[in-house]
Length: 324
Figure 1 (tube, rainbow, N blue to C red):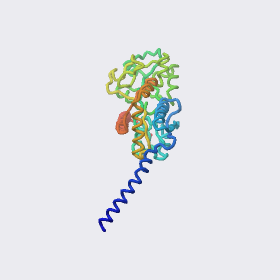
Figure 2: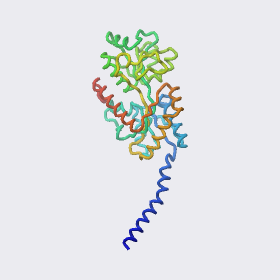
Figure 3: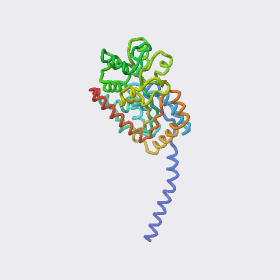
Figure 4: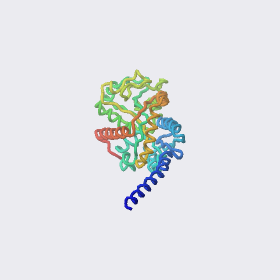
């Protein structure tokens, strides 16, 4: 009787598992069950917004479901991050994160209302773009050596438009051993206007955003911050090759979801993004936009994020910048 009872229980358990298995599989295969929102902390038309729309379209094709962009600019990305943080942890709300909200804010903002490590989980890297130092076409500053020489003799104002750019400017100061005066702007466009108009000597900007102005001759780049030279501007040297071998920095974007999003959903999104990032369409996309693909896996993106937070923290400490 005991053996029979055990057999009966085992058979019942097996039957229950078999019955539950298809349902579990169906539930797992269900994602996404509705429109997926990609929350972007910048205005429509920005480089990050363009990347979000392109990869959203690729994911939409893969999942046969709509992926839409929701622009939530303002407050240094805090509005966008909180939008994702307060949404259900079901993978249907994705953050298009940049280095500002998830690597710079933890260093520069006091009492940040979110923890970029504990509250968010990476899906993948997306794109990256190098920064450029730009001047007016007629400027006497032709290269980094000229810029350093000028800053040793007088005050040189450099326009930036986020805490991230301010930090990499401070890093340039520490590398060159000269002080630059940071002038804070709300965006790249007013920097371009003031440099062209002679009201600002130098701008530290995203090369993608400055590309058209550079091609038209309205601005001139004296150096870029990449590991190698920019493909569209091969005559412009890197800061690295100009005597500062440690100076390499990029502005970058990545995809994140809430940290408590189920692993199977995160994996589906991560696997799909790897396919998208390695596609011919993605290569053509960055060729047109002037950026680079940053195909970090979820694990690689977390490692990169941690390294960037540590780098920005070192820069801030050296410059005496405290969270405000």
